[in-house]
Amino acid sequence: MAYDVTLIPGDGIGPEVSTAAARVIDATGVEIHWHIHEAGAEVLNRYGTTLPESTLDSVLRTKVALKGPIATPIGKGFRSVNVSLRKHLDLYANFRPAKSIPGVKSRYENVDVIVIRENTEGLYSGLEHIVVPGVVESLRVITEKGSERIAHFAFETARKYGRKKVTAVHKANILKMSDGLFLDVVRMVARQYPDIEYEESIVDATAMKLVLDPSRFDVLVMENLFGDIISDLTSGLIGGLGLAPSANIGDNCAVFEAVHGSAPDIAGKGIANPTALILSGALMLRHLGETQAAEKVERAVQTVIGKGEVVTPDLGGSATTDKYTDALIREITAL
Image 1: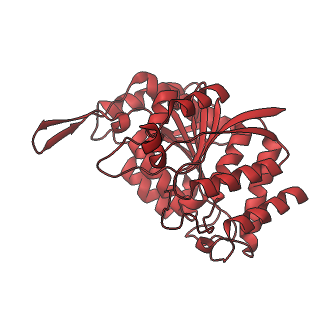
Image 2: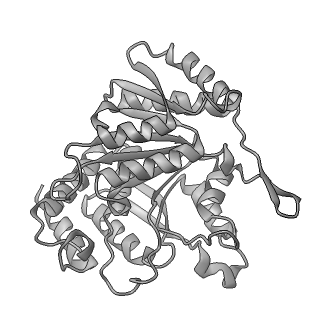
Image 3: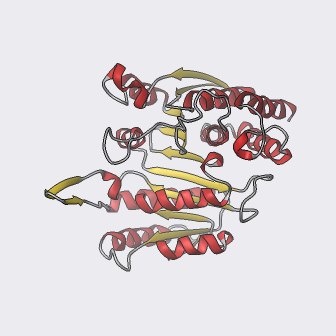
């Protein structure tokens, strides 16, 4: 079976890691028709926007996209392309697994947790205004609908991946109405999944517990801002964002991306680590139903990094992006 997939290379190192990811996915034997479209800071001058209509139309048509890193200015400038994609396509669920990779030095071994983040509400609704000079107000929006669908997504993910427990992460001790609503809804949904253990944890305590012992968690579900922070924390437990895949999923479309930065300082040098986007590609293959191909990609990454012989400089080696990618492809074809 052939699949149409939109490929958005992104900014900085994006085109390099996107090319590597596409090569690795193609090596699995799954037939992908790549539709390449642009987005990001580097296309702003040409299109007058960071997210051209043609790119959005392609994702709506193919239903699946693989996206490289895109730069977002801090404080001022254009709105995040990532946020715009999620809002336009209603990609309400952010799926961020964090799983240890042999050969990567980190504080813990055998980390294996999944963070499920509500992707469209909370403070990231972007509803901000100046009340008076020197005072800015931001609105944090939590709805019953948004809470219910992300809760169902978390419990369905637990079933799909054979997980035993879902933890709702919150700050309802302070944000009694907004996070109180979130918890009420998640509790209601939890009763529909008696086969999955359910617990609740305050967000700051969750951060501490993850640092002390990440094995106590399985699947964590939370609102937008908390999910952004906690998912980066769990990525740090396995070696950093360069090794962490991500998926943004809605009812009609899904976008798989590397969440690390565009690293303009090393762009064009051929030393970027494409692992995060390659593993995001494995998540994409699972989404398409190509489970065996996804497992090949994941095993190849674990084997090549585990050996430590052909890895990029950030992993302690001297291999170029292309040589590392070649090593992955050799492993895949040997499986």
